[in-house]
Amino acid sequence: MDFRVKFFFADAQTIEETFPPSATVADAKNKLIASWPEGREPIKSIDELKMIYAGKLLDNAKSFAELKIPTVTQVIMHLQPTPPSAKVQVAPPPPKPAEQSRCCAIL
Image 1 (cartoon, rainbow, N blue to C red):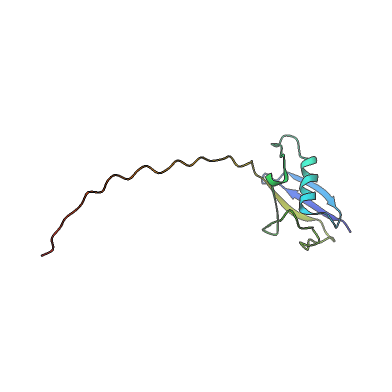
Image 2: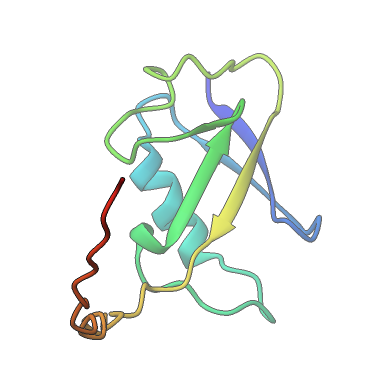
C-alpha cells in the first residue's frame, strides 16, 4: 500500500504526494523538488530541504516503512527549506591590552 503524504510549509501552503513503500526520504525530497511550487525560492538539492514528521527530522537514507509511517491514512509532514549556508569568516579576537602589574600590601 502506498504512502499518502500532505506536506506543509511554514506559511500553510501544501503539496500532496503519494509514494511507494520502498521510497526513501531522499526519494521523496527529489520528487518534491521536481514538483516545487511556483513562487517559492527554488531548491537545488535535497540537503537544502528538511522534512519533519512527528517532531523528528527525517534522515535521507531511511525509507518511510523504516520510519513506521502509517499507510492507512494520509499523514502530514512539515517542510523547511533552508538556504545553502554561507561561509562565515570569523575575525580573530582583538589583542588583549598588556596587563599592568598591581601591587598591594596586606597588613
